[in-house]
Amino acid sequence: MPPQRSTEPQVGGRKMSKQNYNHPFYSAVNAKLAEIAVATPTPPSWHEAWANLKPQSSPQKHLAVYQAVRASGSVLAEAGFFMVAQIIDLITDERALEGLRAVEDHLETIQRKYGLDEDASALGAGVPLEYQEAMQRCHDAWDALYLATLEEHDEHDLARLFQENRNEFDRRYDVGGRFFHEQWDGSKIEDDDWLDLLRDAVSGCIEADSPMGPLGLRYHQEEGFWEVWVFTTPVELVGGACDGEVVMPDFWLDLEQLREEFESISTLGWSALGLNSSEGPHINVEGIFLGREVFLQVLACAPEDEEPGLKVDATRRRHG
Image (cartoon, rainbow, N blue to C red; front, top):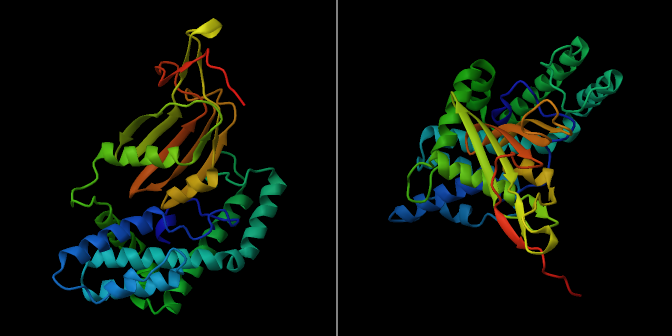
């Protein structure tokens, strides 16, 4: 299952959400198809059907268009592979709520039995074997449902490759995904560019209850895996009795919206106290963002050495 190649399957209906036309998958594909359409002397054979897609169009309608794009040869073979494999993943998600109900109910029973969090890793130390086996059954059930969905939509070649050579399936999927992660001018998204996009995505999920400056970002990259911290910067109060005092803004983070910003998510968790970590209390998300493996931590408070990102006049009074 392309967006869920990690060891942690998405279960319990947690990944299933309303169709989001602004999801990075749709926006990346639409940007590239628009670029291709503009560059061709005559409109491609798929252009009219693609132009008629609406935000409310079903994944099945998108699939028909993407199959036509693939058949036309307008994109690399791996890119066509990626479009179809990913949209069928979304179709599978629609079916999973009912199709995986039995195995998910069993998993939730095991979680309650051992007092495990719904996002508990099957690979954690001391995790009961019964829980590991239940997680694996969920994973296998999702694979089977994805495979059946491929077959039902006449994607027999993809189904055979998915079943017989998962490494090659994943390779083609990854190569195809990178084809769409380019800017309008055709240049690759550089590290700073995509990190800015990640910060913007987090910013769009935040609602501040007090004055808030720009979000801060720090990162570490090793062997293609990115660890990223995003945080609200401190606010310095100016004037009056509180002059010079530095405070942290109060904010809400929409977790469901944040989930939808990722192409796939393997883990989503919350460290309530953060006593044993330098980052303090934080939300953590591990998944794929713009084709990159990311471990994102949205911190409740900025690191201690972070300078204020905003100054606020503490003498200003509210009226009304």
